[in-house]
Length: 196
Image 1 (spheres, rainbow, N blue to C red):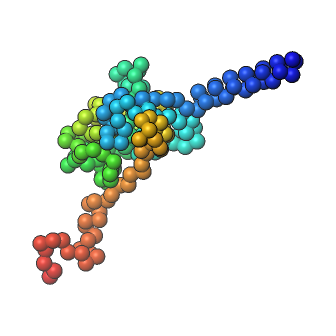
Image 2 (image 1 turned 90 degrees about the horizontal axis):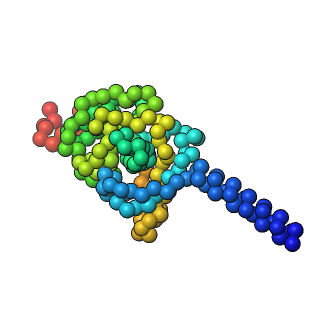
Image 3 (image 1 turned 90 degrees about the vertical axis):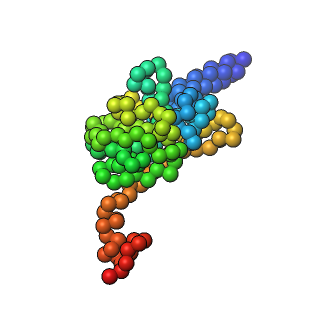
């Protein structure tokens, strides 16, 4: 009987320790709004990795969870687009970081509204929803302080058709102006131009 009791106590203590370890490392979250469509949908359940940013800084393209700046009792889920210290601008339906266009294959539709150039404060991130024309995000005048990030979307667990890794991307910056100025030097002729 003593052996059974001792094993029961050990298993109970290990179970409690494991429970608290898991609670510290991950959290479940439900997508409430359509601001992340077409990649995340209302009702979709996600596992959030709460410790990932103890090992590295948040990166452009990460889908993060953080408290709604206007209602801290509610969590938002958005994609990091701009990093600390960068200049961000939205024009002609595209995001520009320090003058370079951001390639974003994950968005639903191009931006309708322009956003004037703004510098992102230190230890802050500029976030946008993938459904750009139906999202409350950093274009409303706020950024996300690094300490306010709950974690990174890691796994989709519901519905079963959406099981798998969360849609985190590493978008690339495209030097549109720079590249187009070098095309003639490389012998590339634009349509409608005649080689002289």
